[in-house]
Length: 367
Image (cartoon, rainbow, N blue to C red; front, side, top):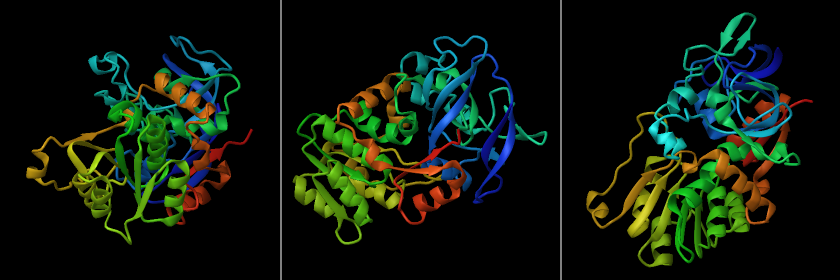
C-alpha cells in the first residue's frame, strides 16, 4: 500500500516528505496507521550519523496508532486495536526470557540497521529500497510495518496523540528512576539535563518520594519547568558550579545522579556529585567511541556507575503503569508536549534543537 513518509536522504539533511510503498506485514508483523509520533534526540543523532543507520531512511520511534492489518502468527492483537510503539527486542534469548528486554543482544540489529534481520526492508520509493524498521517501526509516516514485540496495547479511549513519547524518551527518563535506580523515599537525586528525558526522571523521582530532587541545566526556562514538575532545587551550570552546589546542599553528595546529556565533562561531574555508596546512571546517547574520565580512587569507596537503556523497561508492563500514573495526576508528562502537523516536521526539529521552544515535539499525522 502507499503511505506518506518523512525520509532522511543525507547526513545532516532535512526530512523530505514523499510517497512510499509498504509491503504487506510478514509473519509476526502488523501494519499500523500512525496517529502521532514524538521526535526524540536519537532520531536526530541518526540523521547526523552518530549511529550508522544507513540512509536514505525513515526514522521515528515514538509512534502510536491503530492496528490496520495483522500478519501471520501475531497473537493478542487484532485490527482496530490502539497501540503505543516502543523499541524492538527478540523476545526469545535468555536476556529477554529473564525480563531484561532493553538489554537484548539483538537490540542493535533490530533497532538501528534499518532492515529486518533477513536484510529486507518493508519500504520502497519508486522501486528503490528505503531503510526502515527503525526501532522496529519507522513511525515518521502515516503507516508503518512493525514487529509484534514493538506493540503495547492500550485502552480504547487512550489519548493516542499524546502517548507516543512513552515508547522511548519519557520511558527512558522515568524508567531510569522507577525501574533501575528505585530510590528510597527521602533520598536525594541529581539530574543533569532538563530536556524531556531529564524532566521525565524528575517527575518519576517526585512520584518515588525523593525529598531532594536537583535539576542542572543551562537554560532558565527548562529549570523553571523542572521546578514546576517536582525539582526541589535547580542550578544553572552557566552561573553556578553544580558540583559545589550539590555537595553543599546534600552534605556528602547525592544518593543518586542521572546524566541525560552524554557530554563527557557533565558525566564526570555527575559521578563526582554522588556520595559514597551512591549510584550514577548514564542514559544519554553519545556518538560511538565517546569516552569520559573517572577518578579511580573516588570510585573505590562504593560508588557505582551504571548504563541504562530504555529505562530498563519491558514496555508492555511499564508503559501501562506510566499511563496509570498520568491518569492519577502523578506523572504529568503532557506538560512537555508541543504538537505539530506532520508536514511541519522540519519546523518541529528546529524548535527542538535550535530554539529550545519545544521540549517534546509530537507530529500529528493527517487523517
